[in-house]
Image (cartoon, rainbow, N blue to C red; front, side, top):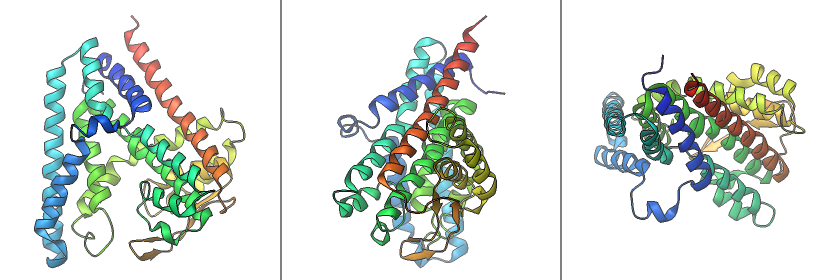
Length: 327
């Protein structure tokens, strides 16, 4: 059961998704206003700097990380609740809620980042590796050109779930409070949810909460990608389903393997595998049964496939919005 007026929220979702795909994160706006994610990032950075996890006992780090995580989640929920109440219900409210929601979707920014890596890789591999830093947490300098292409495709698949489907899902269920909590937890995980000596205990609550919030969206994203194979020439629905069922749980993340496996199977690639995070080698298993030698052409195919999945998500939202309007 949805907790807010669907006749308002569904059009607001459509509006937010359209604003994101057309405007993304315009620099002219965020030079004048701090992005909501920046507020969360500043709060985490200041607390972490003052606390200095490397100088603390692991149990104290766990407690401190839980405190900052839960405090920011509570603040995000209350902010969303206040804005939802201010907006009210109806057509004007849908426009206003969509504006409040738009900055917390990141499809256009994700696509542009992947396209930039694809553009640079053939002509300036070093610049492509620098551009890849906007997408991944691993060390790009350790990657060959195929590794750069694989990393960009993996990030496209994973972030379709994290940065599009997850905000969509939690806004659909809980309105702006759900959306704001989802994005706050995602930001916390991206900052402190690493298995490094500094963050292993300090970021544990944030990482586990992020896993929980992304459990359903990751599987929804994989399903949308599989459906998209039916509409994209050259994509293979059978292998997408087979690799998804066989390999999705091989990933170190309980969620990221699902969209990655769907893309790997659909495009005949092998993704994941060994990689380096912050100087630490992670011997991850491969996902998929095809080529590990991903290319720029594969990045372009992945953009078409996941872009079609985005269109399906928007189309389903539009159909639902129309359905609730019908007598």
